[in-house]
Image (cartoon, rainbow, N blue to C red; front, side):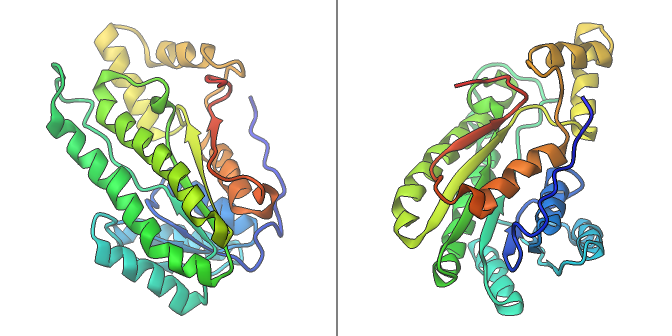
Length: 269
């Protein structure tokens, strides 16, 4: 299925968006789609070199980009991120929580091991909530705004290799619903975007690993996954980022506490 780029020009004019977990995959795609829609973008990740590369692309689209190296498991760094964003760009209107980690699926798995769950919960749940907590006062001062959580298909279809990842994202989904009720009076919306498999290098590596375990070709694994989706397609990061732009924009101003599955129809409830 050929990718189609929608014209979102002007949807986010004048908005300041903070994006965590910016790297070569989803974080980059989200930042660029927000910029195409008119937003200036504050880029956050632990590695500054990945931020600089994306910042150049954002600026190439005519938008401002601000790089703030951040480890979201550190509350003070979360506060510094949003304070810097507001101080240098004037306000914060959108927060996209894309930073995540998962268990190493290369490691042997033999039953429940709580240690495998620790890092996913520290980053995906507690780190994300710390960043939200730090950003909400700025969103209030801006008169409202949007928080978008990137969750996962694994919330509905968990696998043992990534049980901690799935559980942390399920907890984050519930936290987002509670947060939506708590901050709705301040005109702050909180929603989730739940991708399934995402086209890219990480997925290709995963397919190669699965293929090796089963003695088949990676293309065979990819075709099996596509066949599970009514659209028979694995979406690109930019296709998923379009859903983030929707939630960041006024097109979704009457929507909060919801999860949008962006997985080509793999799940329908």
